[in-house]
Image (tube, rainbow, N blue to C red):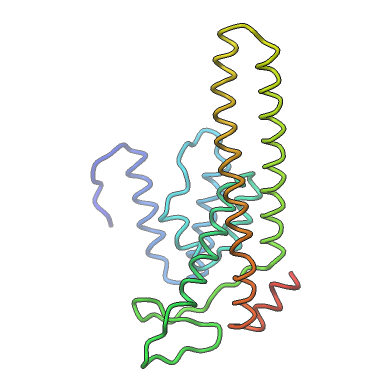
Length: 211
């Protein structure tokens, strides 16, 4: 059992939850329970607790597709895109790393820096395409919102209203810039990701193409 430690009652509860999740012996159970926690966080309108790395990192390692789908289902488009990009970057980096001269690696598997044999998780292309499509829709919506705010600024002379709209415009422009950058980064990584999947594991490439 972890010590109570300091912090607020809520922080101590989060630490206790993390402790018990880390004790799960099977990857399937760990993935299932962490997904349940992640969904509760995303569904709670009163909770401002973002998905912490101790929740998302194991999910990205064992079931990234479920984490991405969960974010898309709850309208967390930026988070879904970030997790997709993290997954692709991690897999490509691991595949590109030179294997140890004394290590024999099975097809579709790789060896981590700690010498642990892992099987790569390849995402269905349909999920990648869905994420990109939803990102593109968000980009268009924010472009339209930015245009409306700019038009309203031109038509309004009230100082207080102008200040509020300027602040809102800045917020929307920053969000739009982030979405555009994220979409471009994902597109830049997708072709290489699919190519590597086809080379490293033909069955995974089939799943990517068909799904």
